[in-house]
Length: 538
View (tube, rainbow, N blue to C red):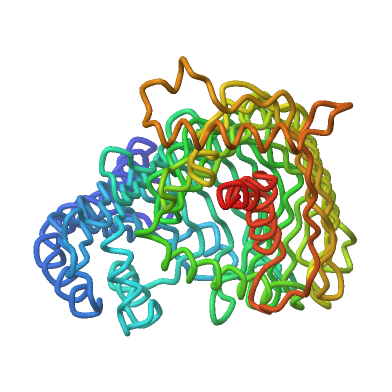
């Protein structure tokens, strides 16, 4: 054959076609081999991974029914991963139907080898027993082995996290009233801080969720997930139409009973090792009914809780690095009550149709005074107005308080009168004015109640009661008539309030509540204890 003889065109086409087939066939075959080989690795890999995670975790264990490692793309998919707390294994604290870990290929182009995690429809379940067990443990959260367990799943550090349609359930004391965040979605980027390293919070994130079915919440912000000793976060929070009576099972331990109510709020928060700021721009609660329930059985616990609250308030007041601020807090159409079950005859004192607005509330003296204004109906009928101005404690409590109650029906107060005076009324109205000032550890002010057209004894109503009790009520009614201010046909007395704040562990509002409670019940019976006793002796 002549060296320069030309190769026919058909031969060139055959050679080209054959080369193309080999060029395509070899990669395809390789991909096929890797794809098939991936399935042979799944069984041994599942067993090894489950053992390693259980070895690294302390106080918790996992079950891993399925794993698929894809050699093509180097991705790992975990199926039906379950995490349980060993002290209280039911319910499992976490269930992951699908957890996928893979290389974050976008960053590979920048020369960085990091991972991205995707969690689809995870379920988190927490109950009170599990939380108490965790709190009682001597092993810190950092020593639990969670970081190592994640590396057992995938050796690369997480740089991108995506959670889709998660469900978080907390059960306190009543399993019929769980607190549920549903349809929760979260996306966080740049977790390893490999981009924009100069930023304090380099990682952007977005979270949105349904709250107790009808409510909605969202957080948009940035974070530093690598901060020590714990991550830092800064973001904007928004809550809409949150039904707050779901919290009743939680706050019941604080002697509170809550019914109804819808909450909405917006603000900003920053929480990091260096600074802690909670700036609530607006909080509004509508239609809530809440009672504080005092009983003899819980009296000791209540006292200890009050001391603890007082200490916490003192600790947070004007503390550097911590700013708690609320620009506007509103309660509309609410009912606020106090139930005393410790009295010989239980009673309830309450405000209905309450509209409260508080502005510029803060724990920092430098933020200026806070202002509170309230309109309500005392015991359902007496028009009530309250105004208060107060500052965060710097040299002790600093407060100015004014309260006015106009013509509340006395019959609504019969339970109180029975508890403190062992009588009731069939007619009359009650009014009250009080001023209270606290400054430089000194207290001054007064409380002045008025009783008008009061009728204590009613023969038709009281004929079934004992003779001695009827005589007692007639005597009380007589005393009221003697004390009446004839031109105005009203009973009036005045109790001065003076003294010093002796307990440094007591917060401002604890002082206010105790003073008004004690002075109120001494003044509300203008001498029903003193005068009736004197009349009896005469």
